[in-house]
Image (tube, rainbow, N blue to C red; front, side, top):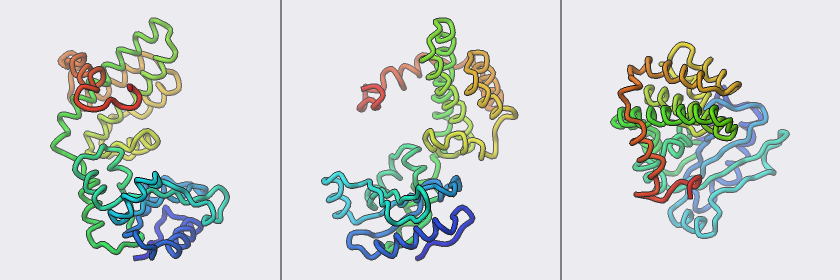
Length: 269
């Protein structure tokens, strides 16, 4: 199966993809090649790199994992300025694990991915399952994201009162993150991690009028007043009532005690 020309793929990108496949698609240990990243998502620019996910056999994946060679780049294939091929290696077992318990960003990495070449007919089925939003978790996630939004709105009030610029900008990022996550969750859309958070939120079918404008304003000039307006905007849209939400206890569970049942995230270790 060869790559299909799509609107998001410029001629020089297509040429680089074909040159890459001609070199590596018959290499032992490789089962399939997926086009991912900005080209697959439709965010690419003329100088965007080409993101390729290589699906390897279990033996090849384990060998590369031992050698710490699951991510690498090729700089000699793309013929356009600044272009390169960025590769990550997975296996069918890894894909199955992501489908079972992967985070939203782990799943989103495969959203819109196109099978460029495959010797395994199961690949597309696994991709479909892997990128399906967990609708049974929407209510739980809405509550937890709402609690995060309220907690970080409170931190904004503390930052302003104490003139703490670091905390003010961190809280602004978190208010933006969790208000957008509430919108994505309501639309059953995966969270893409930070790089494309705003772009994916803009793409959602359902969102409050004026929400994106408020986000632009708070990122430009952070303030508690804007954080409150964003909260009011999103909560009214979702039918949530701020005073009815016990955010301190949920925030404690999700953020302050996040080390209790598993290793803490890298930010906190």
